[in-house]
Length: 218
Image: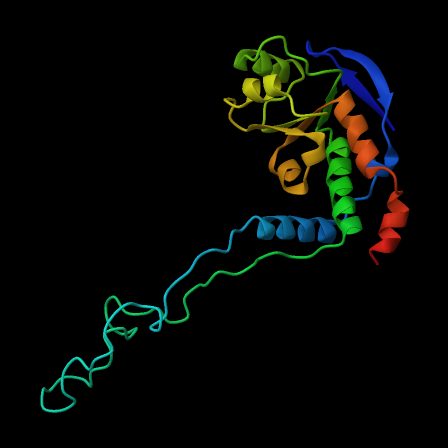
């Protein structure tokens, strides 16, 4: 599959061959949905906690006598019915982790990458080497390649200059290729990648053909 390569001025300077094993995979909505739910669930800390009546500090003495007051039968001050008492069926620390086979996760990532290029939302630039970390420099690059929506900027490795240049732009996020994930790709309209980042993605996830992975997930 051929894809155009832009320079930082927004001009097409080359056409490169990209792997169909990564960027030519049919979209599997069910699989992508499962991958998104799993990733969002794994991001939950699950550390919310409440105290039951057994955990609340307080005396266990009977508040007042059983009969003769005209009031309800008194229980412990730690009763859930009383202010400051325990919580009934409240949340407790738990693990929200969801298991998903590695090949399924990889296929979901390939599906969203393929969807980006088929929809014309993948922009490839020759390099994102910026001389000085300036917000206006990154804004100029995005404007040159006609990116006017949310964008995920992917570099081959973590690039401090790119990170500093993009961090003040609303709707723009930067990631190294190794940390590319389904949620971030779907959360941004445009995917901007440098050529080395494309090659890194192909190296990481292009070893197994789409057909082989599809068969493995049945």
